[in-house]
Amino acid sequence: MAAMAAALRGLGGRFRWRMPAVAGGVRGAAQGAVAGQWDYDLLVIGGGSGGLACAKEAAQLGRKVAVVDYVEPSPRGTRWGLGGTCVNVGCIPKKLMHQAALLGGLIRDAPHYGWEVAQPVPHDWRKMAEAVQNHVKSLNWGHRVQLHDRKVKYFNVKAGFVDKHTVRGVAKGGKEILLSADHIVIATGGRPRYPAHIEGALEYGITSDDIFWLKESPGKTLVVGASYVALECAGFLTGIGLDVTVMMRSIPLRGFDQQMSSLVTEHMASHGTRFLRGCTPSQVRRLLDGQLQVTWEDHTTGKEGTGTFNTVLWAVGRVPDTRSLNLEKAGVDTSPNTQKILVDSREATSVPHIYAIGDVVEGRPELTPTAVMAGRLLAQRLFGGSSDLMDYDKVPTTVFTPLEYGCVGLSEEEAVARHGQEHVEVYHAHYKPLEFTVPGRDASQCYVKMVCLREPPQPVLGLHFLGPNAGEVTQGFALGIKCGASYVQVMQTVGIHPTCSEEVVKLRISKRSGLDPTVTGCG
View 1 (spheres, rainbow, N blue to C red):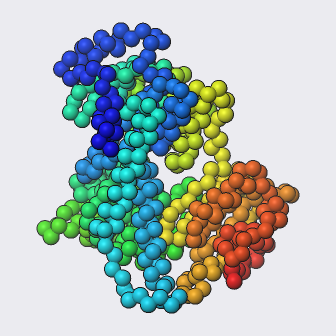
View 2: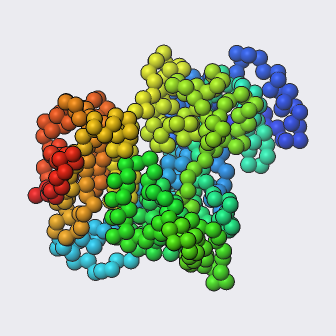
């Protein structure tokens, strides 16, 4: 282990580091680079899921590769290791804390199944957080080891373009290094947006960059926003027993099917999460006892409201992490509205040998698996003779709220907008999971619907599933839908009994019929 650590520390050893005081010398070195004589075949800026996948694939194909990654601490000072948002402050810690909340529900169910468990069972935030953080740190180390094993050079420096083939890296201590490459991939992802116009937002609020790294419980929490990040965080915080309020300006889960989104928040509200709808905060200030007093405007009543909380969590969107890249020096174009990087179907930017993948790109799904696949396919096109392009159509995803919501394809609204109401058929059903029956759980929001073209054989345009293990259910059906499955084919598929996923192949009631779907059960 010590030998490995020494090797990792020495990855950049053959390059000469320069201090900012000799910046002129650095510029001279850049100007002296001879076309075709680059340090690397591929330089990846960003050590998240997409960037690492691209780098590893290129290295597997025998190319000389380097990864540059640097995490700017959050305004609260939170920092983390290699692996990007998903590993450190996204999918992985989120799913683990979601699991912690689900276990709380199972403990409450246990007596109904014969387990004598004294109620209520307290939750220990410190113990959970330490276990989650330790797992994340093991993944950080694992990524470094994988890069080393594949002979990919890793530089923990903040990168900025000098010219179209050269990047300047600045280390934490201020030292500088120049790296040049034939091909460059930008995969820097995004960071949470702070509502800087709100007094006290930056000083007293936190974001998803911080919540998973808190040593102590956040206590009574106000979550501002209605994105999947907002609802997922509010869901697991409520699930572990905290007092949680969600403040929504408008609709929940914008961009998702709105009927399903309403059922998600309806379920959360019935299980303890409070919602302030049509409200926007105007001020956050710290009281003498350390609590945070939040003032907001209720746009429905026109009145002002106030409340006190231990923690205010901003979940009001994300911004691309491009500010320090000096993209203009390389000639890379960005969207004037979002500042995200513009690319073509080959992930190429306005500069042919500079590419961008993942959340930093305009018009791409902000999902880890799409970035990973896009990165691998890009490396295969550049160095493996492939011509396969990333297909961003019918990408499945799941929102890990307490009652999970999985979907693939078009929402009902999108299908109607694209094809017209008269050409769309929607099959739907409420159902009750078998595991809900014994403890008497409410299944009012367990629901599935399939959006199809009306013309036979009724190709499936979208599938939406709300219930336990929604990600597992949706992943299974995503293959068929990706391959062009029709409603007829789905109905000819034999279900696995007794499961929640079999409800998908039992959909018989159309919304057009005007009949209410009967609640079906797995028993």
